[in-house]
Image 1 (tube, one colour):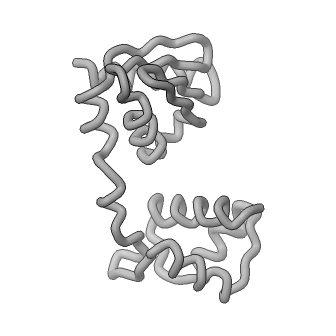
Image 2 (cartoon, rainbow, N blue to C red; image 1 turned 180 degrees about the horizontal axis):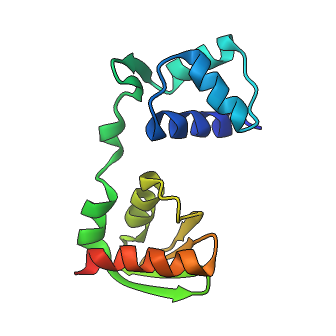
Length: 143
């Protein structure tokens, strides 16, 4: 397990639910099979720019990461095609990367991962049924 992987899991944990203490965060990581010390966790929190708020830990500056998926999809998404558990998203030239990044950051459970080219994105869903549901969800942005 790398530091980058651990950091990614920490960010996911604080984005998905209220985490108020380092102990809760350590338990969440342990459930994912990541054992860490309090000192390492404190260092990770500082490096990630995470602050403790009344609502739990939050990553500061998250708004500076770019527009949300809905905004980018409304602007650039042109077509969605399904092939088993894979989807091909078409965008205007030069905009596939922006849409793929926004989709990755949206952290939808239906999306295993994305690969972006210039005007095309390959989206991997965990199975065929999920891909069909995801296509429906994405088609809403074309209406």
